[in-house]
Amino acid sequence: MRVHHLNTGTMCPIGRRLVNGTGSVFQRARMVCHCLLIETNDGLALVDTGIGLGDIADPPRLGPKWVRQTKPRLEPAETAVQQVKALGYAPSDVRHLLLTHLDRDHAGGIPDFPAARVYVHQREYDMAVKQVGAPRGRYIVDQWKHGPQWSFYGEGGEDWFGFKGVRALGDREPDVLMIPLPGHTLGHCGIAVRTKDKWLLHAGDAYFFHRQIDARPKMPLVLGVFQRRADMDRAMRLENQERLRALKAAHGDTVTIFSSHDPVDYDRCRCGLPH
Picture 1 (cartoon, rainbow, N blue to C red):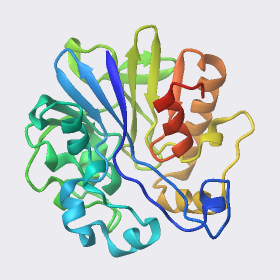
Picture 2 (picture 1 turned 180 degrees about the horizontal axis):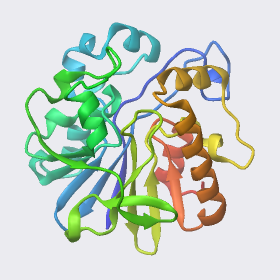
Picture 3 (picture 1 turned 90 degrees about the vertical axis):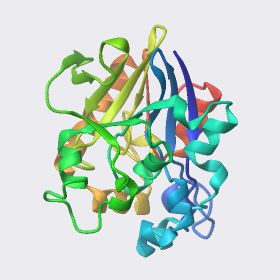
Picture 4 (picture 1 turned 60 degrees about the vertical axis):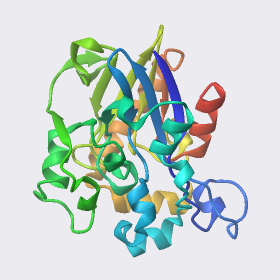
C-alpha cells in the first residue's frame, strides 16, 4: 500500500520559539496540516483534507480570530485536491475521506472531493454536523453544506496494540483502522495504516508537539496554551497522550506515530527518518 505524506495548509503564527521550540520569539513559526494520500485496493483515500479551495476563496468563513492567530498561507497549490492532480490523479479517484475530526483545518477539503465518502466517528458527526452539544463557533458547517455521503463509527471494534479500533474501509481494506482518541474533540480518532510489516498512526490532534510523546515530554509555552484551550476533555486527551507515549516506547520500531500540525513529524515522515 503506497502512502504519500502531504502538507495541505501551512500556518505561520508569530513566536517561533514559543510554538516550534526553536528560533526567536519574533520569528514566524511553522505549522502544517499533515494529511495522507493512500493508494488502496478500492481507489484513493485521504486521511484528513486540510484547508480547501473554498476556504481560500472565502477566508472569513474560517473565522477572523482563527485566521489572525494562525496566519495560514492560503495557497491553492497546497490544497489536497491540487496535490492529487499534481500526482497525476483526478479528484474523482479519491473515493474515501477518513477524518480524524471535523475542525476547520482538517475538514476544509471535503467539498473538493464531492464524490468521496466521508468517514467520521458518530460522536464527531453528531456534534459538528447535527450541532448536538457543539461549542459555539467550533465547526465550520459550510465545509459540508454540499451534503457528502457519510459513514459513521461508534465504540468498540477489534484490538490494536491495546487500542480499540474499527476497520475504516471494511473488509476490502483490513489494514486501515480508525482508532478512537477522544479529548481534543469528543469524537476525535487516529487513523492507522499498515504498510508491509509496519504501521503508520496519524494521531490527528491527540498531541501537537513531537516531544509530547517522548519518555520525558516537553511542550512550548504558547502551543501548550493553545492546545489546552482547544480541548473538549483535557483529562481524556492527557490519558490518550500517555497511551501514545507507552505505544511509542513499546512498539516504536513497528509503529510510526505522528500528529497533524508538527513540522518535525511531517519532515521526518517525508524523508523516511526515524521518529
